[in-house]
Length: 234
Image 1 (cartoon, rainbow, N blue to C red):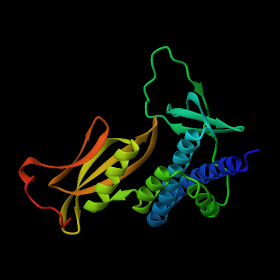
Image 2 (image 1 turned 180 degrees about the horizontal axis):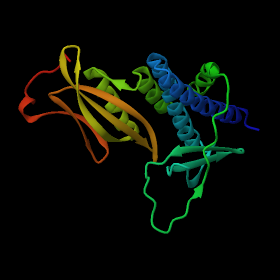
Image 3 (image 1 turned 120 degrees about the vertical axis):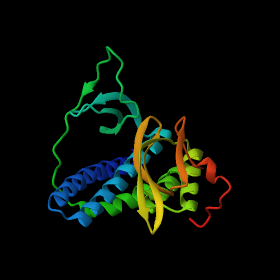
Image 4 (image 1 turned 120 degrees about the horizontal axis):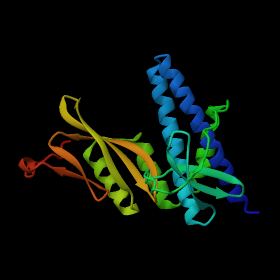
């Protein structure tokens, strides 16, 4: 028996369950207008789901876990299936379009079980300590900035890391956002890796910058009229 592999699978199962519990508590906090509490549950849920995805990718690289086709849930979302030692995990597939005539196995969304969400940290510590270097760097970069990229150096370093690892992206929307008395633009982006939806991030840039996405590559650019201006103070 591979003890390390089984411990990872068990921790993976636990953080997936706890992430679902956080989602339920997030909705309850929102309904009660406890917006700070809601945000905390949302952040924990994001961290756990990101770690789940990266651990699955890492275990797949190490042949500790295997992809087992596509399925579809009650909401019509196409999912990638991964299996190992009796465990079954699902990830949102990057491709949500189903070819005509294709039949996918339907899975039913299970009700969220009750549990102690506050015990998530030991599982996270165990899994992150065993991630391969590139996945650990990616996890630290995204969670260390709470899924929101602000200043120029952070944005540049993260986008360079995404490119190095091979992530692709998609810009969902862009909004104007006043920030610290400076005119800022907020971009909401989805990151994809190895055929799955990894996570969503937000990127804040001065209005004279823009985030571009060509062939899935997220980059920072300036509008033509500002190309000779030094924005290093941002």
